[in-house]
Image (cartoon, rainbow, N blue to C red; front, side, top):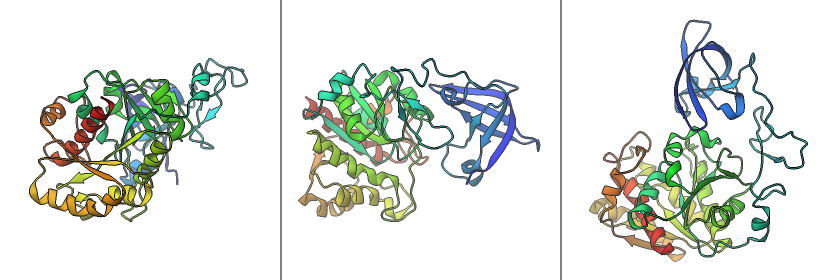
Length: 361
């Protein structure tokens, strides 16, 4: 459960869109690195007393190395501009029934300027949508899209399997100028638009953000237990079903690696094999880049053979993709490995982006 700490801010460090990094002195004389979301708790400054949820940090779990600010008890932020009982206020509650649940304006709510458009929307009109297991695939997919379609409008649909606040992602903050917008769906929040479900988020990407290509992936902090079904990326298969239901073109960005030390993630990760092989009931294009190491390529072919009855395995040329990846405006990193340390992973994601761009035309 929650491991509480209280302390005093001694320094404000880095800031990015929606987040502030802090040093917090604890009563025992130690210092703890913490993260605050000003939209939720206000903007901390040096000397402010803060209450922290430090559990994941103390346990060494995947929080990016932060305690999280729960409140500035001596300096609470003002109420948001719109009163909660106002007729034009949002009523979409996310992180529901938790102490920091935000109340937001859903893109398709009655008060939304996009209500009329989305009330009539029921089809993606063939929109290519890349699905990925890990948040780290996002900039590589975008690099692949930009390699062939530099002016394409790309929307990101942020699902709730990882970090719920979009603000946690420094990657996303660095890509803001590259994206038509972010739609946070399910329990996730903090995007440019808020939606209740993957389905409504996809429709918002197509009909509000006017995307030529969309990417669906969770935020940072994939949850996994090492079992066949106990990982948050299983939702990739459900995203494929949603895309197909709405008349889109699912494009699977496979999790391929010859660098991951865990056997279950070498070759084609069991995450991809379960999500696409067992959960996705609709067909998708599963992209494999040309030029993989021969041993890795053989392992990938063998792993994907059982999936070929439902899906289409697409080979994509990789000319120019390495350069596109190296030109990424944000650092590339997955599980602590950069581009050269896990080249196959990023190349596969970029190839999926290239394939989606070519479908978009």
